[in-house]
Length: 430
Image 1 (tube, helix red, strand yellow):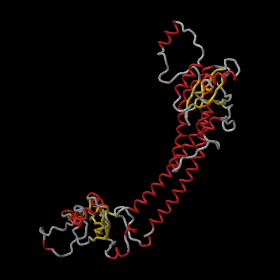
Image 2 (cartoon, rainbow, N blue to C red; image 1 turned 90 degrees about the vertical axis):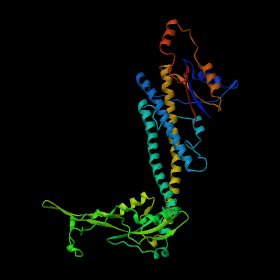
Image 3 (cartoon, one colour; image 1 turned 60 degrees about the vertical axis):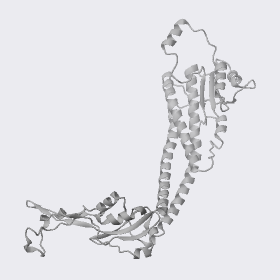
Image 4 (cartoon, rainbow, N blue to C red; image 1 turned 30 degrees about the horizontal axis):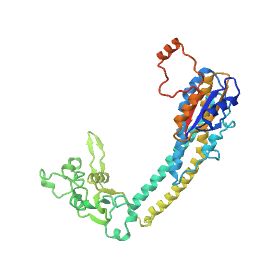
C-alpha cells in the first residue's frame, strides 16, 4: 500500500489551518481517498541557497541508494527462510513505524549541517550494505562447498570420491605402481565409451614418449654393447604412448560410468649437451600431465586418487559438517537481516524527511514555515488521490502576462518527465 508525504506552506497562518486543509483535500468523510497522519519534520540547519540546491540534486540519488540497500536486505532475509520474513523497525511493523515516525535526535543530531547529516545517514546504510556483501559471499561459498560435496558423494565415478566408491576387494583385483619410473592412474569415462576406450587407450598420447635409439645401420660394430651416445641420439625419432602394454585393468562400473587403471611411464630423461665448452644439463620430461591432457581430449577423466581405506567415510562426515556450518550461517545471517533491516529502514525514512525539508525550503523560502503530513493510500487509488491534492492544495493561479508566457515557451514549458505539483509531494511503498 503506497504512502505519500505532502507539505504545503503555512502562508503565515497557524499549522493547524494547513493541516485541516490537507485533511479536507483527501482524508475527510466527503473525500475518503486516504488515511492521514501527522508527520514530524524537525528544524534542520538551512545553510545557503546554493548548498540546498546542490543537496537537493544529490538527495534523490541518496534516497534511491538507501532504498536499494533496504530492499536488498529484505530480499536476502526472505531467501534465507521458507516462511515469509517477519521484519520489524524499532520493534514494530514497518507500516506502524512510518505512521508513528519520530526523528531520532540522538542518532541523527538535527543541528549538524545538512550535508554532514546526509553523509552520516547514508554512510551508516552503506556500511550495512558492505557487511551484507561480505556475509553473503561467505554464506554462498559455504553453500557451494556443500553442493559440491553432495555432488561428489552422489555422483558417478567421474566425480565421486573414489574412497567411497571403491572397497578393499576392488583394490585387491588390480596392481598399483608408484615407482621412480612407473605410475598407475585411475581413468573414468561414460559407460557408453567403454568399447572405444579399450580400442584406443594404448594409443592415447602417442606422441608423448620418445622411443628412438642409436642408428645401428650406420655403424653396427657396437651392436648389443652398452654405448653412451648422449645427445647424439634422436630419442623422438620414434614416438609412442606412455601406456605400459598389458597394464589396462577394469576396476568397477556403475550405471553411468566405468573406472579403469592404466600404468604409464612417469617421465623421461633428455640427455645434456655441450655448447662450446659449457655443458647444458639434461632435463626430465614429466609424462603424467601430458597424459592427463591427452585423456581429456578423448573425453576420459584421469582421477587424482590414492586409495586410503580409513577415508572411506570421509565424504559423509564432510557433508555432515558442512551441513551444520551452512545451517548455522543461515540462522546467523537471517538474524542479521532482521536486525539490520530496521536500521536501513530508519535511515531511509530519515533521508526522506531531509528531502521534504530541503524541497519545502527551496519552494516556500525562508523563514521555514510549512506543514507536512503522511497519507496512506489504498492500492490502485493513486491517480484519484493525486488529482484531488492537485485540485485542493495548489495555490490560486494568477493571470500570466504575455511576456511570462513567451518566457515559458522559450524554456520548454517543463522540467522533463518528472511529475510536477504546486506543493511538495513524495511517494514511496515500504
